Length: 344
Image (cartoon, rainbow, N blue to C red; front, top):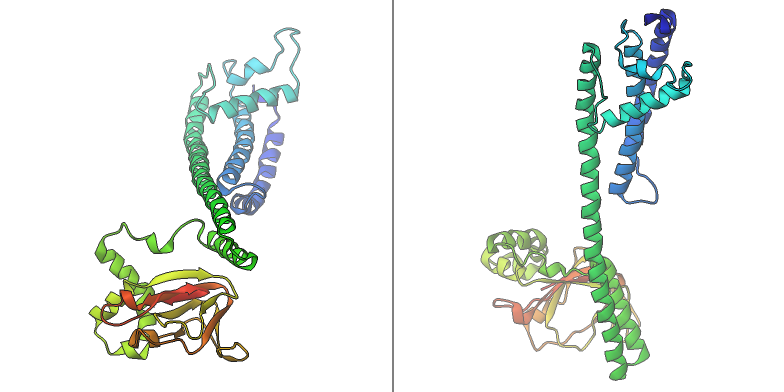
């Protein structure tokens, strides 16, 4: 009956409910912020479930407010007003608990049983629309969690393969009596490449793509570097593209010797990131420090029998590209290395 709740109290409650609009900004922030300690898909699922709890509460309150003003004994909430055993009026927590339970069931497509009045039916229909959105969001996040687990399983598989490879590498170096210092360098470089590439070979990423698309990728990555080399500036685009397709990338730690004085000069290097020091043969003096975008070793492209006149050593590990003379169409170039160096 309408006398269940005085009209002035309903009006006052509605006015107080308007204050909830101030929480809209906080709600949007809560939906955007990350949940600490869990992955993003699981965090989104947790926030969706918390949002479902809030929506169920508001839904229950709205339905109760609607139903108490239905002037008929057939309204839905009548069944929860009197205790069937004692015959006494039920408590407010009892009524709220049942209203909240029914509201949450409705948000999961389980409608209230025995609804007869038109206002209740309309309200139930609107509930179903909200239910479709919430239910779809929860299912979407569950699917994202499954995909995330699949990705982690794939990464775990790569990590397991990497550990087996590392054990074999250690055994191989011990069986062949590698010096301890050389073993340390090999293992540190292997660790560096794993951390940087996560088990992926960057030069094989685009192997399965159509040749035309691979050419566009190589042009984007390497043509600007090739054009900075004076001897290549005046060559035709076909030759430059042939060079770009033969460039490879290497990733190295700080302290890595890209090349040493008196070695055969068979590659040219382009620095993509990091720094490389050019040293005199005995390494007693730094001639210059090259920054990203610089190149060195181009003499190897002019004379395959030439020897390095200086030593190149990385000071900040990253990426380089290299182009070697055997892969050059009519000239010799070498690949990129990390610190970021491109080797032709």
